[in-house]
Length: 621
Image (cartoon, rainbow, N blue to C red):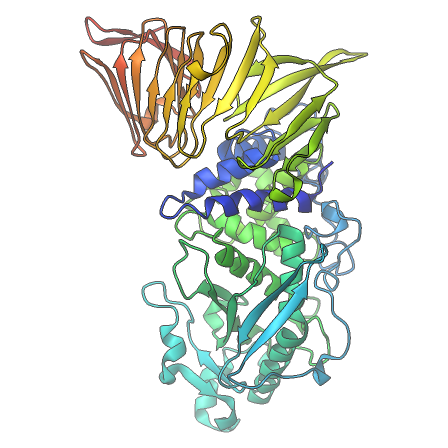
């Protein structure tokens, strides 16, 4: 049984693999693969639809009579307690609310102890090293570049999307030196509005020193360890630059960015701290305790951890600002710090989703960017983790190659191993069927129970260079193969001509896939321009959304073309020619069919069409 932490580590293992494809990174495809790797759901869009239906009780039997908080717990595992309950488990991924062994309240998430006022300050303008060790015993070291002065800050908006976000940091006109302030001077009033709680310039000087002490002594080190132990992301060899700002319009937010492009893993990161919120920070509390009102507390160490998630994703290449939706970027950071008990605004927003599913779906869209993205992303990722709770997940690595996997009848997902790995499959169950519902494939075994025969799915993905054998429900056996990274695979090399071969193209390369003599399913890979060749048997050519620009050769009248995850509105043109059919898609891909297959199927809408090649017309099957 997987924990939320195990699920998210596997999730990021997939995202990190995608970050290596220079120039070909597509956020939606990466999320599709990550969702498939940790659950039985086919892709991101499907998971959002299932989440919406369960959370809003839209057609989900047995859910409509549940109150919203009970339904939320059933769907996501989130336990909503009383607002501003700082002793309750916060729902952080590492806490008991998310399946961990130990409760994590607001002060426990990032562990510290002692009196922060006597902690050590680094030298102004220096660069120091921080080393931390994960629960698995691995150690990592990163550099921290400190501000040139611990008594100065940058005023006004810190990040301008139209310019280099660092320009204002370099412009002395925006630099305020607290040592030059006199509380009676008129110009001080221009800055007082930036500070919460009627903080004075003296308060701000103490706040800057307190924050630097916390970062240097606890927060950066423990935040990095928490992120590694929870997500498997590290800062080894990276440099984090600390910047100090004060901006009333910026709220209590921080910002995180990278010095180099976000299209590749970044070595140089920036974390900026908005001092406006922290003028009344407790100088002694190691958690960075701030009182924002009579009953509202903020722990700065948790906010640091949130921002460090962004930094860790930039460092690993898994945060693509041009490809990742806002809800995921912020939800995965909120999941580290937890939010579902003392943050009244957060919990009210989640509850609102129950009454307004359109708001939920909008918040979980790629182009949405507002405050709802935080709450929606947090709840969605908790749903993904919960959905994988009864799933056995095996992620192949060099450290566990040649390992034998013994299936116990529960759902088992095997993913993310390369040609150097050997997986020996051992099972007590006889495969009872084969379905191509999933991107790669799913084989079903069965168990006899008092209620009758129940299917136990066994999902095997990314089997580059491997051969898997299952019983074919139509008789005989079915075999599945996947192209090597070179993208070449020939079905005639496998079997005696009487078996069903399922041939997968590798992603991000141009595949050449040739059918066997006994009938084949030919799957092109993502993002490549693939050449698919039919054979003597009845073949099915499968084109998935974002499949690139593929060409089908030797298509014959009995063959089938299957369009997966494609609906009619995404087909911009469907031209029948003397040589076959040309399909173009709104997202830029194309499918050129040379030959005259009999049937075209749209899996998304469960509709089939036949082609009258003589009259060049389409007909419903």
